[in-house]
Image (cartoon, rainbow, N blue to C red; front, side, top):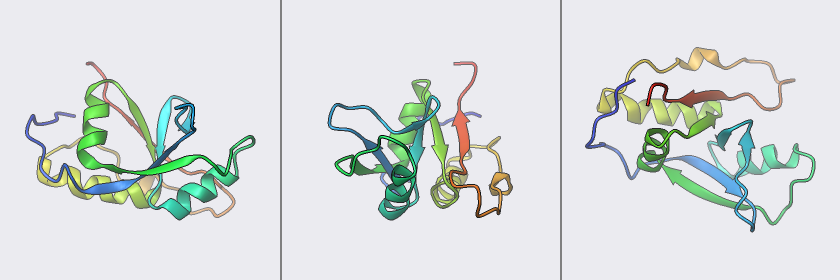
Length: 121
């Protein structure tokens, strides 16, 4: 996956991430979870033992995620946020990404994410 230096759509919101007052980011393994909305993030946090209603939820933008990927970060997107991410990746000619078909249409699966990380940095 090649990422251009000049990112189009950098200021567009992809979704939300969450962290605690002490700066611990909500992750699935080593991947920062990106939810499509604040409500979805709250529902994910509710399902995690030990989560706190005081967790901070912030919007994250396409350019911030690209910057994190370039630094070796990993992201776990839900279906809603990944659809947005793909729509912003297209005008930047970022290819080699998994399709939306990777999401399971099974309501019994409570946390269903697609994980993205750049390899070979």
